[in-house]
Each structure stands twice: as structure tokens, then as C-alpha cells.
Length: 105
Length: 237
Image (cartoon, rainbow over all chains, first blue to last red):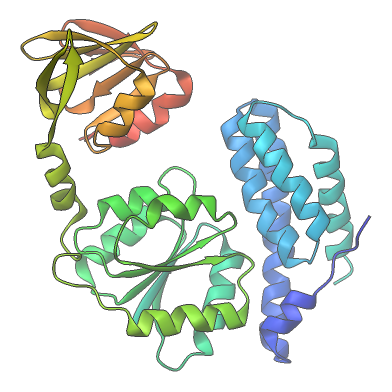
């Protein structure tokens, strides 16, 4: 599985450590909230809400340079629109990978 | 250019602010996590440019665009370009940026915004421009006769196999057509498909219960998936 990275964050920060730290701080605080919202919405069984949460998380996936994972998230989002949970397990593996990664940054 | 940022995701707002700070001509005066908050702000403050996320829960970017009384320039931000297509029918949309937004692409969009001018006609409230559509009528072919139907007089369209039944204030018409075809002709500002077999004129609703609406004397079922959109379109006190 591909590994998350900070290439995009570094490009954006252009060497400014305060910008880089702010961006990392937002990832570290916002991603766990979004992940929680996703799992909460699964319990409620409403496809629309789950789809919205997947959509929000997709942005973090792309920011962390996970191109293949982004495609998987896209497919899962599309499947949810069709009321299917196909790709759920793959999507949740991505969440785990990001969770592990952000603990290291 | 004084600008505001509307995005439900903090990360997206921080990225946009970072990119805006690199451009001398841009001044971010406010940021909002919901379009409804931004609407209140825009009633009191003039802005030149809005960075608008399309895909937001509850009240999305397209709902926001339709609600603008005097639209400024707008740059859409989205993870999915297909969401931007519908918005491009509005003349004040300058560009759209795919997330994650690249610095070079952002600079290009700003250059476009700087050259972009909104004419007085384009700056008219959306409601007014939609009114033109509402004034329209259209013709249906019934028994080799073309019969004119006034759009606002329609209160219900019902699918009936290969036919549709169009109910107006005065008459009912049965036409060989599909719900999809007539849906394309009806202005979004007045009509809403609330069920796979029904399109209603939302101005003619008398009351709404959990899963149905009363429109004239007809009780029409509302699909669960269509209910939020219906509620959004109503003028609630």
C-alpha cells in the first residue's frame, strides 16, 4: 500500500515552518474528527451522510499524496450513492494508514 | 479584491488562505464553514470575490449561488469537476479549482478573476433571471393538436406508463412523453421531482406530512431521498 507523505504540504508552505506546522496541526485535529463522523454515520445507516463524510475525508487523502487511495475513496463514494458498501474495507484500510501516519508527524 | 472563503472543511480554508496570502491584490476579509453564515454576511458587506466549495452538507454551493441577490465573482472549489458543471451556467462563475489546489493553477484563476467583469445584467438577482424562465410556456402534442400550456399553472405531473398526466389549474392533459423530458423543460425554481413518478409545483403545496404532500386535492408520496431537497426549497417561517 502507498504511504502518506507531506509533499503537497511542503509545496504549499514553501519552506515557511509556521505554515507547515499550521497545516499539519489542522490535519492532525480535523482528520480524527472526520474519521469519527464517518464511523458514527455508519451506525446510523444513512447512505447520504456516509457519502458526505467520505467526500470530506477524500480531501485529506489527496493532501497526503495518496493517489491510488483517492481513487478507492472515489469509488466507495460513488458506490454509496448507489446504496452499495463495496470498497468499504479498502477505504477503512486507508483511514488506518492515515491514522498511523499522522501520529508520526 | 476583497474576498471571502466558504468551505465546511477547515483544511480547505487554511489552504485557500495560504494561497491568497501569496497574492498582493487579494484580501481575505472573512471565512465561513457554512454558506448560510456567509449569506448573512453578504447582506451587509460588499465583496469582490468568493471562493466557494460546492459540496457542502445541508446547504451546498449551488443552493448558495441560487440564493445570491447580487452575485460577485465566484471561484468554485471542488474535489469533483462534475459538481462544477451545473454552476457554470451562471455568468459570474470565473473558474473552478480542483482540490487539492495547486499554487500555479490558483494564480491562473486569480488572473482570470482580475480580468473578469460582471455586467449589470449578469449581476441581477438569480430570482429575477429565473423569472424569465417562469414566464415561458410550452406546447404539447395531443391528438395532432399543439396545445399551449402555461408553466406556472401546472401543479402536478404524473408518470403513467408511456404517458404523463399534466395537471393544471384549469385542465388535465395526457401526453405521450416521459417524466424526464418534461422535467428538463420545467424551471427548477418552481418544480421539483419528489418521487420517481411525480413532479410538483412547490408553490402549490398546501401541506406536508411525513411522507406526502397535499397539492390541490392530490396527496402525493415523497421519496425519502427527496424530502431534504423539498424541505430546503420551502419558505419556512
